[in-house]
Length: 362
Length: 264
Image (tube, rainbow over all chains, first blue to last red; front, side, top):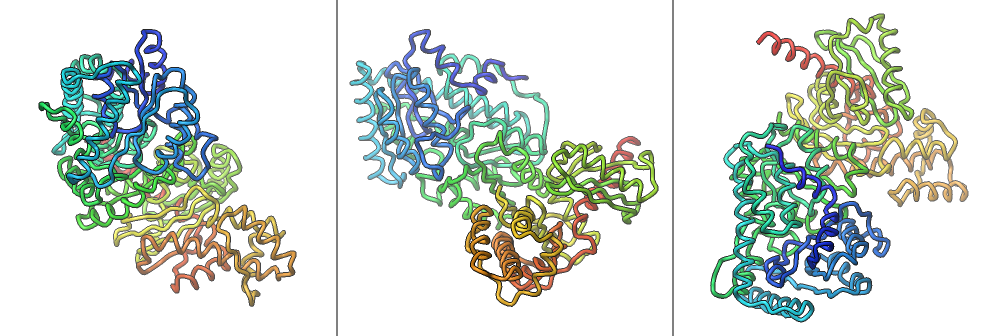
């Protein structure tokens, strides 16, 4: 089954939906990464919108040696400033922190810096992050003149859990060596969830049946790397005979893999979910990330691991060395592809991807 | 007869093999800016030299940077083609260092010629044939002369910059300070060899090691890289057409597959 053209178009030009929100009086809050709980923004009556680098070149306000993804994301936020009611930046990797500093000077809209601890797996961090979420909630209440009560949070948690369940069920169709959903379709559906109103998304995606989609490549791969919004990268893999069975991308499984417990203490439940979910290369202990990748490689029976690292993406590049050495023990080949702007270097990326897939496929 | 066309960034190579994979003829032409034109020229040239007509070609496979633009039944990546080509010529080879016009790559292969691992340069001209082309223009010596003059050097200069643009100004300052041209040339070869050594070290040098690609025809560079790696490399008779040979061998395989599918 084809995914709806609405989702397809949205992924090509997500900013178009911002005008729709403005025209219908919906207040939009732009956020940078999957550490920012959408639940809190939704309970404040706001529409969360994941800021992206799509259709933007790196900002002239940053030096050329900074991550081009963070820089182009900043460019998009500044360019469309009038369409947003506010912004949240998570303090994760260094460029995001710099992005916050520049945005602070460039926007007149309320701006919040959500500090995410680096060691995500201990009581100290959980206590800290819980306080951060309370601070975030207060920021939303004060700036948007709303009161976020527990009921509002219960509702938004349940709404987001439903979206995550839907995404995970689509994802699991490819587990155990099965091949039912094309990666490019699945990729677009995940992205749409970050831009569409959740209730609308849930209704739309519930009606999709992926069971008999067309088959492109057949070499099963796990993909990781810097947050990918460019469907052209996924397309290169498919056209080269690869099938992305699994991923641990910020714009992939990391976004929806774990649910929030629907408990009496929503803030605690949120802090647990966001810190203990799928590990992020910039924040989580390396061992957790290796364990997760190992799990995905087994669960989805992948034959090779492909890493798309945006130029200067240190967390991804450092981790890739450890991932390579772990997987080589199990004879799983790995390949790191550094890139800047896929549209301008398709030939170069394709040569490497094709050669990798041909060598994995034998 | 089977055709392999390697549309490289600098030169386009066409090579014809017979059913058994024996090389019948080959042609090398500059790629220019249009791969369709250069591949057509290479094809005409190789047909002429072999006395064959286009009808006698059963199957063609294209490879190289411009492979998608070349008229062929199928295309394959240059990594796979170089590996297949070298395995046919020198079966003992386990590591290939291929330096072309725009790409340099190190490839590890197994005893069947299958790719185990590979490393490639970034999108940068340093450590490729392009680097030498820029420098040969700068110092006014042809690529062929670089090879000859390299061996006359007694005290190669040291190029500290890995960037082609910065290295260019470094070379200019060496020349203006009176460095001998042969020392500059040897220094350039050492710089590119150092760059390729670093890249290849990521995958290791299992013996035997072969050098391929157009730059492997430059004896000065081969000497510099052999010295840097401490290895005695195997060199195919025509290092520039190894990739086209791999493509032609792929054409045989793909043709046979298509025949067997047709019989099913």
